[in-house]
Image 1 (tube, helix red, strand yellow):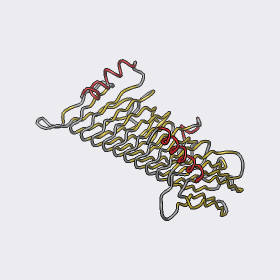
Image 2 (spheres, one colour; image 1 turned 90 degrees about the horizontal axis):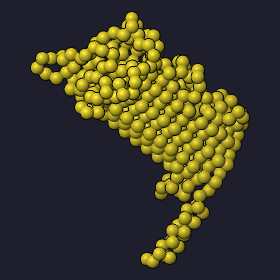
Image 3 (cartoon, one colour; image 1 turned 180 degrees about the horizontal axis):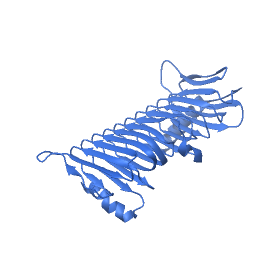
Image 4 (cartoon, one colour; image 1 turned 120 degrees about the vertical axis):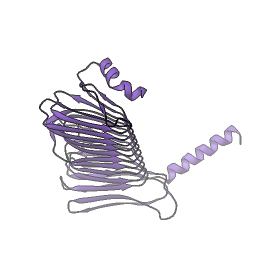
Length: 316
């Protein structure tokens, strides 16, 4: 096929795709603190919080979509993209405005999710789509299989929020910052980057992924980190008032606080490190099978941190 015919074929295909797409708009009054349930298979879902007591959706429905269901029942608003029973869709793009204090639930397969200015509870689920959201202090839950999760706390009060935060992924990477003082995070092979203005409780688990945590700790903080093969690097801001209990089987332990790890057996592998900083009101427990562990203060200069904490992690 010559170049002219190729261009004509591409143009025809693009025209047919555009012709097959349908734009649908729906709106309804809504409870300012009601719940909004959104589902979409592929494409995108963008949700924006606003001050109106109204839910408004603009949907570009892709080829292979049967319809958009939109309904309100009391305080509950439902928005579902319904795929045709036979055939597959080329994706639908939803832009949804909701009352700012709504409780939000989104379920997607490969559709990416983007959430802005929604201050209420968020429960987000995806298989391979990415999730990017702002969190304002309400209860937060996000789960993916291979999709990436990026969640950023937006309010100063959020640093001290008592709401539960649960984030999990199988192979997708996770990046969370300033979501509150109580975190429950887990991955299988995805890497995690975690930062917090203050942590009181944190449970961080991975199988093969690496974890980089940077946080200041409450006086009686309880931090638990665990991995099988993943490396765990914890950097602490401000004063430390905790007992440390670190154990590895094959992995090395790199400690910037002073004490050196000890072998757990004269003839076999295994290292452990126990020490106390301050009066030891808090507890930091880190355990790994084959991964490496690094703990350090953030006040040290960057070159000291690189030499003292990452030397072993990077060079083995």
